[in-house]
Image 1 (cartoon, helix red, strand yellow):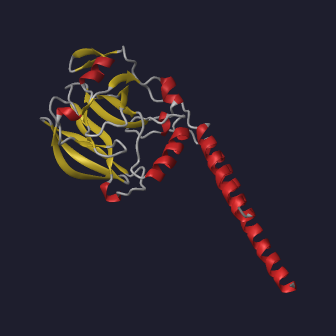
Image 2 (image 1 turned 180 degrees about the vertical axis):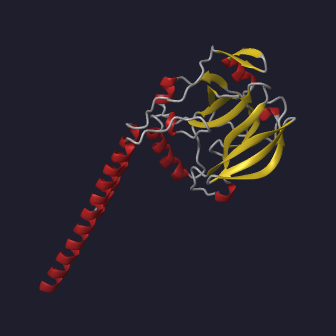
Image 3 (image 1 turned 45 degrees about the horizontal axis):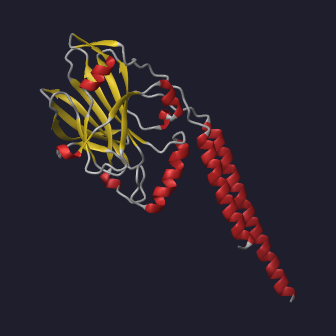
Length: 285
C-alpha cells in the first residue's frame, strides 16, 4: 500500500472510531417530562383505573407478515394533560435488517453506538385518551415515506396523525416538513388503534390486513427513567411528549470533523509534494 493510500485509510478509520466514541459517550439524557407511575390511580369517563390497566385497555394491536427480527416488548409512558392522558408506546424489536447488505452493516455499527450499545429498534405510537369520554381523541406514529423510497435510505419517514371526528371516525393526516395534509378517513372500533408494519424499519400504517396469523404479541413494560437514560430515548423518534437531547455532543463532533479534515490536508500536502518531487527527479534525470 503506497503512502498516500495508507494515510487516507488511516484517516478514515480514525474518523469512524472517533465518531463512534463521540456518539457512545453522549446522548444519555435523563427524562425531564413528567410521567405517571404504573400503579397510579387515574380517572377516565368517571371510572378509576390503575395506570397500567389504562395502558392495557388502549394498547394498539399490531400486524406484520414478517416477524424476524423478533418483537421484544412494548414499553410505555403516560403523561397527564388538562383534557387527556397521553400514552406513548415504544415497540421494541431485536434488530432491524436493512435490505441493502452494505448499508445494513454500516447502519448496525452506527446504531450500536448511537443508541447506547444496543441494537434494538424502537418506534413510538402515541394515543391521546379523552378524560371525560374515554374515547381515543388522537393518535400519532411514523410511516414510510413512499415518495422517497431507496435501498440506501435508512430513515425516510413521515408522521401519520389521526384526529377524531366522533362516532369512531378519524381524519388521517400525513405530516411532512411541518406541512399537514388530509389524506383519508379511517374507522377505529372500540377505541383501540390497529396498525400494520409496512417496512424493514418497523414503520406503521393503519391496518388493512388484520389476519390473526400476522398478529404481533408484545410484553408490556413500563419505561422507567434509568432505561430512558441508558438507551438514549432522547435520541429516538417521538410524538408530542419528549425530552430533548443535550447539545453536549456538538463540540465532540466538531473536534472529530477537525481531525478528519486535518488528515485530508496531510493527504493533499503529501500528494502535492510527492508530485513535485517526482517531477523534479524526472527533470534531473
